[in-house]
Amino acid sequence: MAQVNKKKSLSLARAILAALWHAKSFSIKSIPKHPYVQLLSNDKKAATYRSTISRLTNSNLVKRGDGVLTLTETGRRESLFAFIAAESVLYKTNFFQKWDNAWRILFFDIPEAKRRHRDYLRKVLRQVGFKELQKSIWVYPYPVPSFLKELLLYDDIRPHTRFITTDSLDEDLDLKKRFNLG
Image 1 (cartoon, rainbow, N blue to C red):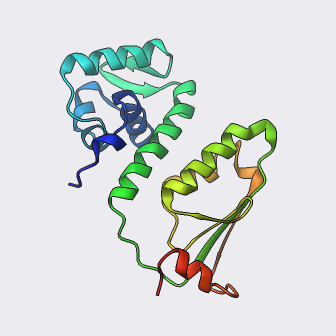
Image 2 (tube, one colour; image 1 turned 90 degrees about the vertical axis):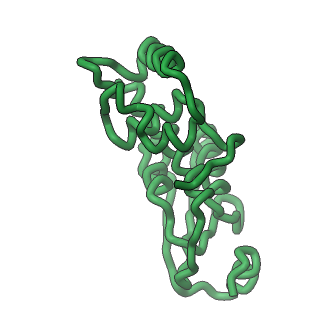
């Protein structure tokens, strides 16, 4: 399995939330075995798992029942962002893309009232490797990872975005150069 840089690790709480987004629910005993927890939150002691689960429960992000953790309604929202953070870290550490001669172009106009969603989308686009072509127009030469598609489908973002995949883009030599494509 790939090693993840400690600087890019997630907190145990975020790793558990990401795992719950991915699996929807799982037994408390299996938490240390989930790939997000193993790869992204460095080795922890049993007491750390217990206290983290307790904090998540007290924050109303997860609920316990019969040795199983599930997300609350509040937790579902937070877990999406934890999932995207986890996938972003893993995506960058396992980046072996080959250009398929298609361009992915994302247009967005997210209103000022949703500024934090706009800023978060820009952050994720940069993490994935998109480049800003013009204000709020971003381009990328590789297939888009599923976690980014999840974000684009998020209710506060979806109505304000348009996504295009094209194999024909006039004057793309500058873009090929920016992405180091032959």
